[in-house]
Image (cartoon, rainbow, N blue to C red; front, side, top):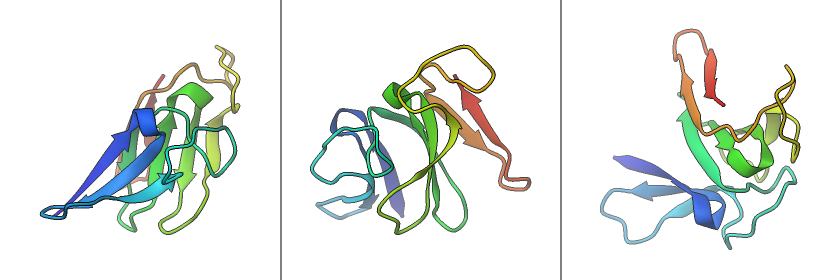
Length: 111
């Protein structure tokens, strides 16, 4: 069994195999460095995972939702404008939760 952890204060997503003594960073920087580039996260919140273990991440303090392909070293912004909060139709303001419908692929964002 696998456990995925949104490690907010270390700005990364960790993968833990049950029974293991160490986790593996699957999104963000292993050293916990925060940032706003495609390779960084800043206080990740909710995560959703598809059946190929691709990640959808509510990147709270970057005001965006990131798509991070399995095994990739960087993500791609799906929604929001990096570093800019707002209430316009193209903006997010500290999104924190995600849910994904596995049948349709629809992603729901709690903003």
